[in-house]
Length: 388
Image 1 (tube, rainbow, N blue to C red):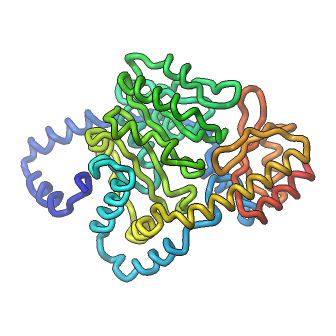
Image 2 (cartoon, rainbow, N blue to C red):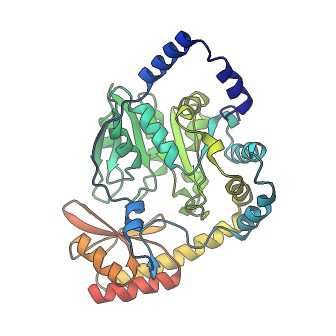
Image 3 (cartoon, rainbow, N blue to C red):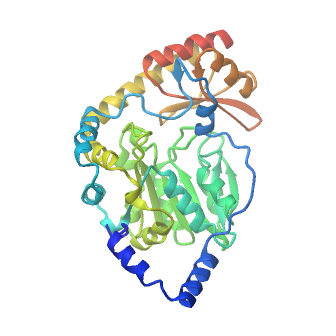
């Protein structure tokens, strides 16, 4: 890969750093170009903190949007088979994975940047596009990793409320774009609401807005849609638009713990963001082998989706029976309004061995339930009925 680390070149370059003055000058220049880090304290509850604070044993782990049905048997076998040569750097395998993605998506290999999940790529975008105090525009609520990280550097977070039906308000987001906008972040399907926006409207949005600012479309949950290819904004990249698409193996593929993800963008964009992350070289040989085996493994993905939908329908029925409404979900989680304070509900459910997440927006307490195995959904139902 063009952006992979070449150890031999690195060693050769290091040997040239003998000139003291030249070295000092170069170092000062690089330090001056680094993003400014703000010492800001956050009281932010994330899936990670929720899990770390949870009871060591849970009947139902429904507080992180994971796929409890994966990884696939083929991915597991690839991990085991790769162990014998895992002492070697996985240069060839990393290149092969990029080739596979490029072929499937119809993009150039230079348009792909791999990483250990999408988190390092979100951080890279936050650092790069917040330079100089630029604005990061997002929906509110939405997945807040990227904008939160941007505020740790020089960025300013511009929040745009959702529509009345809890979808991203693309018109309002576009209206916020100005000369100080560094990035517009679109999570579709959105987390935590699990809603999607109209595909044609989002395509038109990307075409217009990308002429004024970078549009970052996070498609972490795209595989849960009936036709992911049709709903994706990948065509915006192939059309040459200033759009970045983020994908992850952490959801339907079941790789949350294995860590593998990627972005697709214009080659110059990929080169710019690669400066902030080791890219594919951060991936382990075992993870790369599993990703190659699992990528577009149609039969397994269909089966995992079928099981997810069955658990989701069961959850819908439980909520309806207890007199609760919910936001129709296009992902592997469901959000519904609570009839008690969120922290109290979360605590009471945890006492019963069930982990969930809570939010508060629009002056309403909400619960987000990740979709689990049927036994986990039944455990949720039993605990929920004691509180509802």
